[in-house]
Amino acid sequence: MNVGDTFRYHDGIKVTVTSIDRFTKFSEYDSKPSAGETAFRITIKFDNGSEQPIDLDDFSVLAEGATKGGEAAVTTWE
Image 1: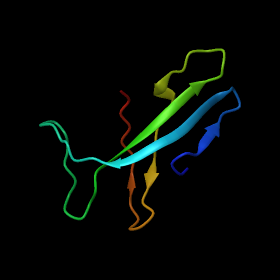
Image 2: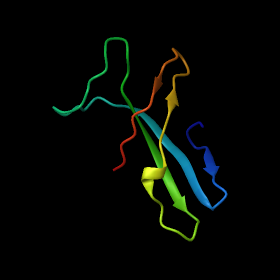
Image 3: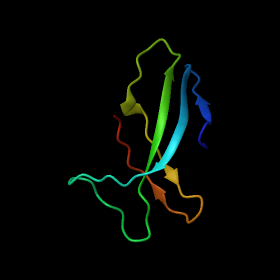
Image 4: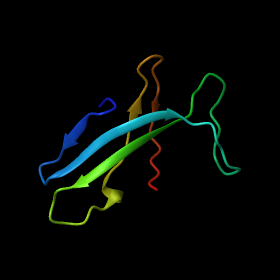
């Protein structure tokens, strides 16, 4: 999915990628990227059109690089 794209699940939940931004503010507990790697944050919006609460543990994100390849598969919800 690209920024602005929305995916709709059969139960009415819609997921939209709202932004992808370079990440540079690391805390002491964060793992910094290795040389040649870029840390980034993907912001996702959930619209619950279903009749049930959303359990974010049911979702994960896999981002694959478009320019140099590679992938990121760590998901943290705030």
